[in-house]
Image 1: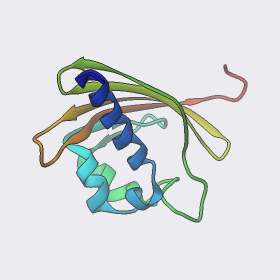
Image 2: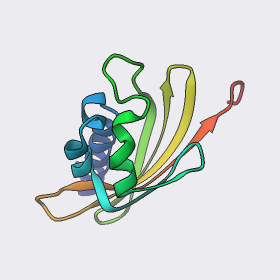
Image 3: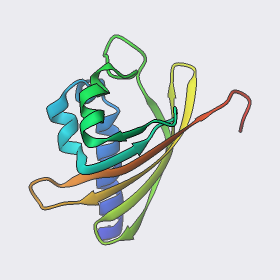
Image 4: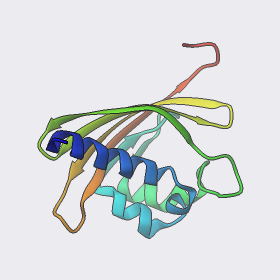
Amino acid sequence: MDSAQDDVNAAIAGELQLMDPRVRASRERAGRLLDPEFVEVGGSGRRWTYETMLAELADHPGSSTDAPRYEPSAISGVSLAPGVVHLTFETMLGERRTRHSSIWRKTDEAAGWRMYYHHATRVPPGVD
């Protein structure tokens, strides 16, 4: 396997970890996967930063092992440059379908891969 595919696989692994309710409920665990310069434009249109996301993530849907979990599909990625990966995928959370785009970047070896940017768009019912 080439290093570009290794990078994509590492970013996908990080993305899947961020969908795990145990990670989402832990500020420490989620904080290791988000870049300190992280920004998200959520499905609601709200802009999130590293601090605001970590402060509220545990209260978001998908963050409890007793509630619906994110079900990802069609995850694919491309290496944009050495140490930078763009992922696209869809999720279902209960009946809510969302399309996602995220950019992951590799930091130093100790920190590894971290999500730098994320965008989510809710898909209305009946849209292909």
